[in-house]
Amino acid sequence: MANNYFKVHIWLLETLQSRGRLTLKELKNLWLHSAVNEEGKTLAARTFSHHRESILDIFGIEIACDRRDNTYYINNEDEVFGGQLRSWMLQALSISNLLNESAGLKNRIIFEKVPSGQKYLTTVIQAIRDNRVLNVKYHSYRKFELEELVLEPYFLRQFKRRWYLYAHKGDDKSPHIFALDRILSMEIGQAPFSMPEDFIADEYFSGIYGKSIYPDMRPETVILKTTNEQAKYFNSLPLHESQEIVEENEEYTVFKYFLTPDYDFIQDVLSFGASVEVLEPERVRKEIGKTVSDLDRKYNLQ
Image 1 (tube, rainbow, N blue to C red):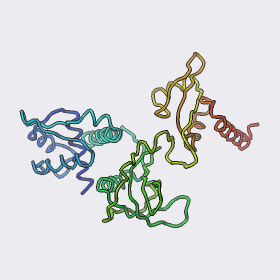
Image 2: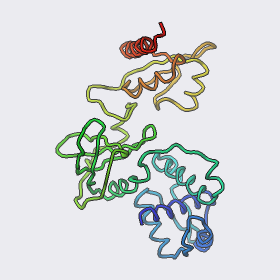
Image 3: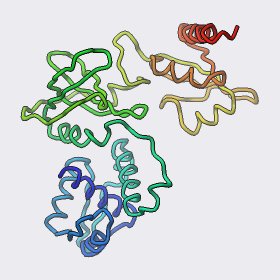
Image 4: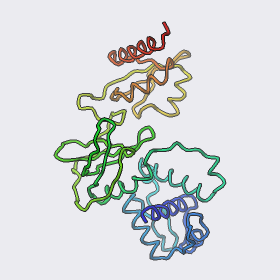
């Protein structure tokens, strides 16, 4: 049932965003002929009102009505497209709805698969919205035995094709990270919980590069020297939000960052091969150099 509601939410938001202001009569007619409406049901006024309330409650997106002509529209569109979650949601939902409406495109557009994204996202979002605990069976790659956990879901984060749940458990002070693709079962519990009033996810991840928080690691200045060809890719898709150019000439480009040079960062730098060189900090430069030397010996390149 939750997935069916999500489909209607998707359709309503994408339709109003792409077509602009519409009357309820116009929305009803479009819904009646929509491929998303698999059962061919009409969009009753009471049902439409319920969806408006749910969309506002879950996503903070207000579908308002202009009583001068009885048209409906997204009232806080500037805020919607300014927020990362809402912007991502509308983009993802718009594409999903487009594919549903245009069946012929399904075999001509290829997406990366995100493990367990659709299976548990709805449940996690509902628990976050209602401040309810999650009863989870979890199998970590680092542990042999299955864990049965009661989690207080704080927030979700997507990183490299995986969804991660950051949740509080037991008496621990900080949230733990749980990959949704390692969850074997999940259900929303009855017990409520309260988020700390001063906990803000964006601030929690300020300066963090990868998926994990390391207590002994703090953000620091990182300098990368790249080929100008690689710089084009960094300029179009920044490696990190703190990215800025500090030097640029005909031979190379130098970027500066303020981030945690953690495991994920080092793996990414290595993936760029000889097109990217770490200039600072020295310890990160040495660590990457050691990895390159180890690879050199492993593949008998000397």
